[in-house]
Amino acid sequence: FRSYCLIHFYKRQTSSNDRMAPVELYGMNLSAPCRIVAMTAEVLKVDYEFKVTNIMAGENMTPEFLAINPQHNIPALKDGDFCLNESRAIAAYLVNKYGKDSTLYPAEPEARARVDQRMYFDMGAFYKAFGDCVYPAMGFSAAVTGEKEVAKFKEVLGWAEEYVKDGKFAAGGDSLTLADLCLLATYSTIKATGFMDLSTYKNMEAWEAKVIALVPNYEKANGEGAATFGAFYKSKVAS
Image (cartoon, rainbow, N blue to C red):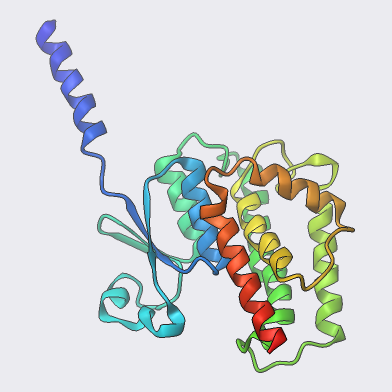
């Protein structure tokens, strides 16, 4: 019996002490998608190393980075020998591997579908409408921001406001999910630019404060990067 206990104690210690090296997250903190992944890792308490990859300086085109992500976009993740890009796929992978029982990405089909829908909404509608408004001024797009783009952005903000009404989280439930982290990365970036007065979006303002309080090391994972993006935008508008 003593030998049996020692063997199992050794196995437990080995699995704990021989934990793989930190996952490697490649990106820039001004990137909202990169911050989605960082916040997910923080909430899950997954050890990660943020490796700054300045795409504006071409650091995403080096042979070393292309070996990790041939599509040369950010964020990219390296977990041992496993490599992955696309922020929402990475976030879901982290929950599936390191937080199997986490409510961040619920297993129940309808609940997960709502989380997925909100994440796709964030990517295809929320952040896109925002980008259509601010990217031209930042030199990221040759398009011109006009009344049409601003009106669309306001419409999308209204949809987001409806998602979090009655004190609910973004996917309509009472628990933090990946949907909240995705939308928070976008909303905090919008706020940092000062592009639009958000004070009238009472539901979003209350939701933002609630979610921020649930993200460990929030400033490191998201706040600082949002502020960096905001400062960059303001410098371009002022110049």
